[in-house]
Length: 113
Figure 1 (tube, rainbow, N blue to C red):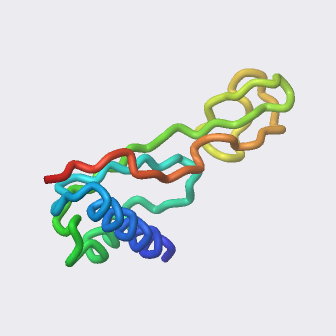
Figure 2 (cartoon, rainbow, N blue to C red):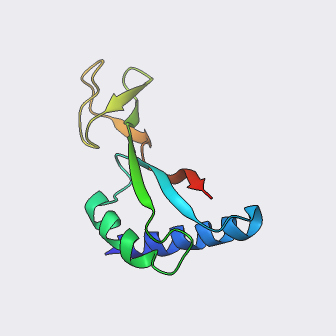
């Protein structure tokens, strides 16, 4: 389950920020996760609680903001919203699309004390 590795990376980023910004405790972590990022949110939530034990984010609330997926349509030359990676273009019905948004996962912000 790669969500545990994502949680480990998240913990490292939080610990580095705690040293750099001089805070001791994180009460809320807001993550922006794209629809096509390949992250199982429930597995991430499970791993988050386990991995954050003993860190500044122990007991923190995890808020996940799902970002829309987008793709470039070669037929109508537009970036369009996509519900699924293999969905046809909602504008022209074309099937030659390349996802170009919604693949990222990033820390949006931390609520700290």
